[in-house]
Structure formats: C-alpha cells, structure tokens
Length: 107
Picture (cartoon, rainbow, N blue to C red):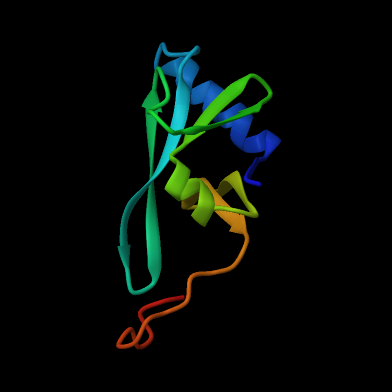
C-alpha cells in the first residue's frame, strides 16, 4: 500500500488551489531509470490515465500509474520544508539497489 501523509495532502491541495485547479489531482509516474533506480515525476491532472490507481487523503486525489504503484509499494508520499530542501518526497520502503558500475554515485 502507498500512503499519503496529512502534510503532503494539505500542501498538494494548497498548490492545486493556487493554480485554480482545486478539483484536480496529482499524478505520480516513473520518469526514467538509472543505475540508482527509478526517478519519479508528478503532474497536475484533471482525470486519471487508463490503469491508474487512485488514492484519496483529506479530499485530495492522487493517481499513480500501475507500474509505478508496484515500485512504490510500502512507501509514503510526504512533503518536507527543511531549509533549502522543500518538496514532495518518498519515504519508507526499500532503497533502490545500485547496479554494477555505479561506484559511489548512488546514495
């Protein structure tokens, strides 16, 4: 199961409202992959794509494509504001394993 924290839900609703799209949703997808594992993207969308899983938290809808949902299993979608580090983050779950030839580029 993928969960959304209260903080992430409230921040997402704030962003959607500021964009004039309060009834829209966030959509998470896999944006690419490298030796350190996948990278994820976030879009603001009006409707889910075919096959998307739908999560709801505090009135926020989040769509996640089915392949991405599998890779996020056991993770939390959170929002952090820590100095220069601000944005949506994924926490929990298993970190990606580094493939051969990665050296110290992962981590």
